[in-house]
Length: 431
Image 1 (spheres, rainbow, N blue to C red):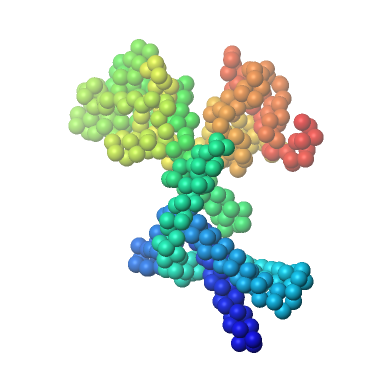
Image 2 (cartoon, rainbow, N blue to C red):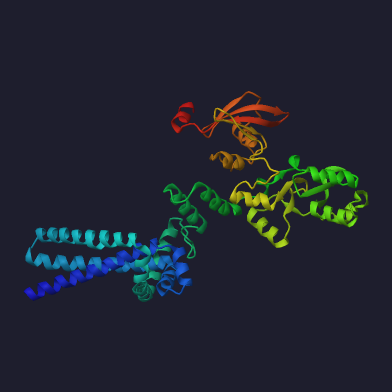
């Protein structure tokens, strides 16, 4: 009798130990850093390679772990109940078996192994990858049968599940990790904005960062060479569009370096320069081109300037490689640039902003969080929220900021005063 008691006790403890392994494996494999696993695999780590194999079909891996975990827990609980009720018959035996197994499962199968797996997720995942691969291999047919039942059951309720569906998109996973580490103080605000800027490139169009046609620096292609040279020297830009007749009729792009090289060839005789011979062909792109594609196009064509047109071919603006890079690294300034064009800080903490300043530039300059989805410019944001073109002197409260219209020219807001963000409770009281 005593030998049987010890044998059954040992068997139950052994089953609980295996269940603890499954519990630790589930937590470690779902929390393991995919980035570190891929790096370790490239370095030749066998355990990391096996972890990546398991994570490649995460649904199957989790299914295998859950099957093994639940089968072993049910088996160990049944053995304990059968064994204890022999010594303590009736309801008290069932209650005693439930209490003992609950304590053992919660402490030694759930809390202890999962705590270890959380603290050392990568190491535990690599250590348990081999047995988990065998479990997935052995239980494969059962797992696929269960998945088939689950998918067809959910389909009855209108839920469609694709076998290749990823629960969390890679970009959102990276963004979430950046935001989390920023909130914990491990990632600085500037680094957070840079990493976010890289992720945002594919979601933004060139129309959101371009220089609007009203703000473009243009040169009349029919000007005499001497005056054209003077215009180039007065400009802060090295590449200038040339127009003929109307400003929208762009006929070429003049590069300052080409112009000065031509001057050297004619030994400084400006009137002898053949402007038509050095003008480059303009590159037109649709305003719906996203920034990621345009960045790749800039790099491929080795061209830094493109003219943006709408669906009717009308000129909308100009975008440069620098404009796209500034969405990642922030404002790139040189000796010809002002610190922040169109944004003037006031003594009371507010700022005077030109209407054509983009919301992104204002956020970057003031470290604010005004929404960028509704409009490109700060004037456009106010018009969007006011649902009208405000008059000078009107004041609004949007997104915890006070906006005051300072100047308006025809239908265009040209200057505003924007206050710093109000405390959340004060903004709610005003609302």
